[in-house]
Length: 440
Image (tube, rainbow, N blue to C red; front, side, top):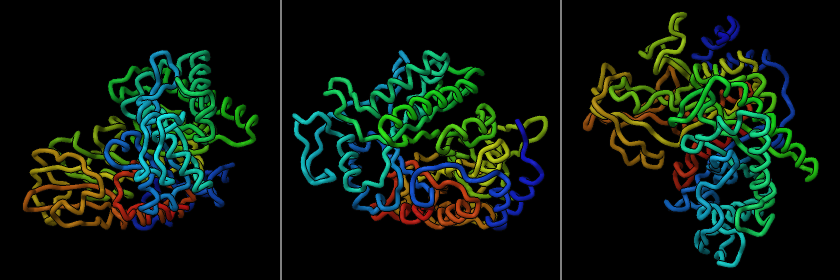
């Protein structure tokens, strides 16, 4: 691993006081690069889940909450990768087969059994019709659908086959069992969410070859998307969702990857959570480091300690140190909360940095208000959290105040924008999206 330069370390220390002190990083990292999305190039990306159609969160909800007015792009999660290394739908019924009734339809009309494309895909097409500046991107992989990435990226032939199949299905719109081209024009690009190159992720096959193969896979996609874009006279977006942990980042060729993609959605969340079953309680997405954080610091002998100290500012500094331009970095913000139980109040009666006896099931932000307790904001880290001394429950999440700080950070450094997982976690009136979208 290449460590941050003294310049980056000094700027990072100052960032703990005020984000504007990090502005020199943006200058040092190089000029802005060609971009798409928005007049000033800023992007606000929201993940829309395929399975929301079953839980009652429809595409129409984005209009009712006002979220659609804050977004430049929707990433649709997820496409699967078949064992033969080609793109395939994880749920064709949700994607294009399920008829959506008029009450849940973007345009107020019900799908029919005879139309070739219904389901989520048709609703996304209707949303684009109503909001023509909005981009729709197909996200491939994710935690549960990354099993076959390593094999698909392993040879020139497999990479070409993968890219061709994804473009054929999602850009040309050739869905299985449907009239050829019926879904053309819905998707404006592809997002690769490989979790993770040369890392097991959800028990996935992996190996050291993944590091360079990931770069080559993105280059193959970029080349084929550009060729298709030349024929269609448009630019097709290519992005990558990339990890935040320094050890995982060390298995990515950050500089080359950043020059291939339009930008990287850096997953600056899940820093801490229920996998640390006994705690100590901590933030899952803090903006800055705190001098009181008990998590272990990297050392020369142990550069990647388990559940080590981490912050969004440090993650961004690491990407810049590895050759990424600020214009290629998007900061990700969670719309959900992790929690612990059996947490003592601690010296400040807020449960922060305390041991736990168990974990609480994750909840969306729209459920946090119903949880008992008091919301706190940490002065040092910029993190939001909630603690209830009666039930001894601690929650870590982002709220409007913490997101405003992140938006200021994004603007101060000249970063590309923000991304969230996922849109169905917000309140019906869009409390988070109303500040999230300020990155535009």
